[in-house]
Length: 240
Picture: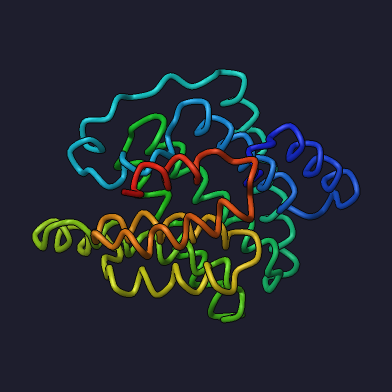
């Protein structure tokens, strides 16, 4: 999937679902493949969109592919139902907890970046972060779960102080420094989400005008995933 081979990703995840019909990470991962295919088609993950606040605020509401949207929602629903069923008799099922973290994050990303419904996305983000905190309380070494905590804190922590105060009143977390710390944990020690965390850290470095750090992160991603032109394109954009 990180090489943008979404057809191959779907085949892999569907095979996993057939072989492991009780594992909600199968459909959750397949939902991620649908989401990132839409991101690629709609050019959502261009770093400039996230480093220019005005461009992000005034971004267009995108037109999703209805078939992809339906498949995405179906896989999320399947993952959440399976996770809830597993957790009803095994409350410490870490894979099911993480599947719910992942599903909430994916739904929030779709809602914010494609549908441009920011308040609804904030609600999904907070639910995902809360579920991640439950998982991390049980297993602090589940490093992929730190991404949900890190994303909320970093993204909301970049707002001006009055906005952060209002967000805090809603139960949101807005500690930018802590967000970066959590993202680094996933980037360095995560399994499924480490490359995505590294991309987010590259965006954060660009926002802080640290092009050298951004180049180092993007160069590593370009070498690891040579079929993905996004990393090389962003490298060319920031290299003098």
